[in-house]
Length: 162
Image (tube, rainbow, N blue to C red; front, side, top):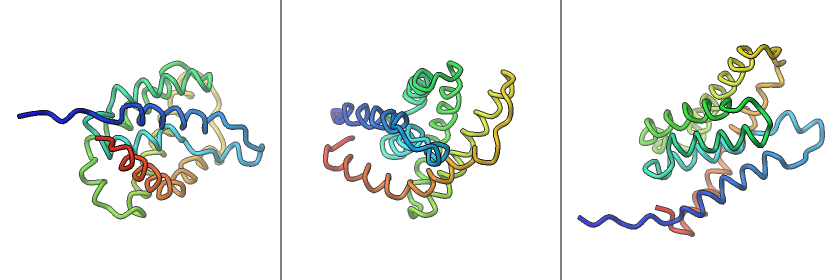
């Protein structure tokens, strides 16, 4: 039995770095609170597409990077992304067969779960509870998901990521 060589590790890394860039991209004040969780969306895609390569460890490292990038409590995003990647890797075969609009509904639940984890951690350290605008990023991420999925799938196929 021969194992096929893994291809496209650089593409995965570059897509996560692009998600970090979109996270810190300057936006007007009215659009800043609706910025989707780009790193979480990219992690969801890669966990669905190549779950044997992108999993909990990558989610943890991406979360630590997100914590450092946003100046949040170290480990806050890491915990949320570990749970996110675990669920997506565990359920990837079920999620993949759904049409894009149903996948978007699942992405909404996953992104809302990460927001709930963020609220929980912020409550533990004594930060005040956010207002209703805190729930805009999961909604915008759900709207972005079909386009992101199509773009990422074409990039994965073009570069032969396995």
